[in-house]
Length: 56
Image: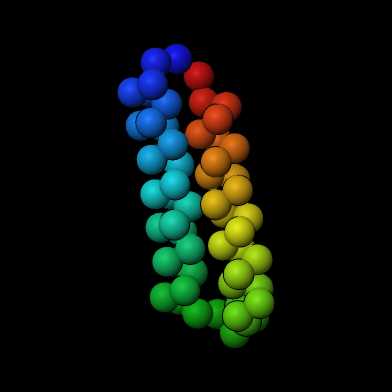
């Protein structure tokens, strides 16, 4: 895969992960404490990096 394709995939995955995190923060459900939000953020960013790495 060319570098331009890799960069595009990484940006798309990162934007999706941070967008979902922002949506969760805006909704602010009762069960989403500060500690859980940090955990969700770490998981989303990790999954975004993994998704960017395995895209064809």
